[in-house]
Image 1 (cartoon, rainbow, N blue to C red):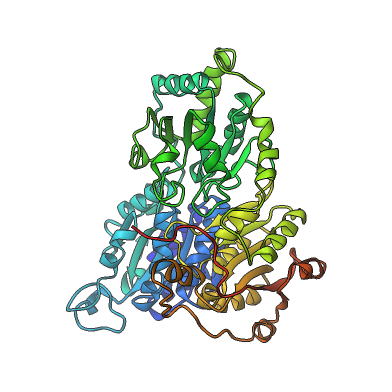
Image 2 (cartoon, one colour; image 1 turned 45 degrees about the vertical axis):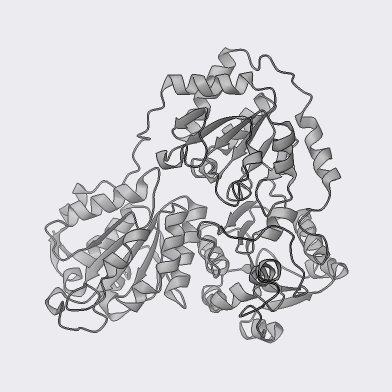
Length: 556
């Protein structure tokens, strides 16, 4: 049976398990949108293509599946670049489908022509460094090969964005629907075989260590290995910390949790590792600038190091591991736990004397050393949020620093920092996209500068009746830029301060509730009024412009 390419593409999306697409139609992609009219896939119209792509990122992170963004040619595609780059850095399976002028127009100066001919922009080349695969589909005879390659990249253990650019006339061509039978859209079995000697070496390091610490990262979440990580920690009584993106792998009220590790964290995990650990085991966690305290050599000095990751590029990237294991976290830990069980548990180390003291020592540490003054209202807000016990709460955070210090991510809560390329303007659209995947409370946390980059996407939430709580810190400046200029540029402030709108009136124009908090004693009253489950609310937290967190903000 013959069908249009546009319909074939939609059926391809259905077979990939995509149930929702985010985007904005334009003339050059209308055949695909027309095919979506008869599909069960839900379409979401964003206010800007960057917002649409960030919504897709949020959907992918929560669903664990492939997300899709559809735009027209030229500016429709270029507007997604920052969000696609973010998905690339975070290894998110994002499929971007864009339109293009008809092939017979290439090189003639067609409206929004983007095929790279005759001086036109080259859309595919533009995305070359931020996609795992990209293709301008000029003919249908290789369509099956293109779709297979796209599916392989999206379904791999280390996925990333894929771009398919479809000329208008190609979308309308007739092809045999049997092409789909040549395309594999099921997730392949784990292709990385973990060698027994690697499992044995990791188990031996764990059993021989007297004071090991586990550093768990987002790789544990991506693999679905959180329960096995916690089981390993419990079996051998090992304290755990996490990278920022791994926050929540273990409930942070656990007796073995050290909190999160990083230059903007409380510093407790750092001090514990430096003072007590003889071995550090990285599970799906890198050693980037934030996690490593700007690559502080003291953090790992004199310690044995193990690293497990399913991406070979991450192993021995910054430090040389004594034991480096390539493989899926779940498969590796399953083998390690089996090996430890055969050995009868821990050997040649004291047990039951270390981890039980962790919660008390964290409490004794008190407020983070990087917040000396001016942030009591922030701390009070997060402590109260933690006490709310909102089942399934999804927190998308562009600010990062406050939640890393003041919010313990406990069982049932999921924390999604935008730390890959750390772009602003992500939290609100990502939280909206996530809410399309899971009907649980969604929260976006960001500063007033970032808010103004993406706030119009709140109308997308209104259009589709999506509940969302937005927590915005108002200090009328790009806070970390002003801090950097204060610390490293003699207070020569330039282009960091700005005038804010009246956020109460702005929220009202969106039909949202608004609450302003300026003092700690105002927090409880606000929480008594906010509907975190079914409402749309903007919570504005007012801070002093020159209240700076105390950490090194230099860039090397």
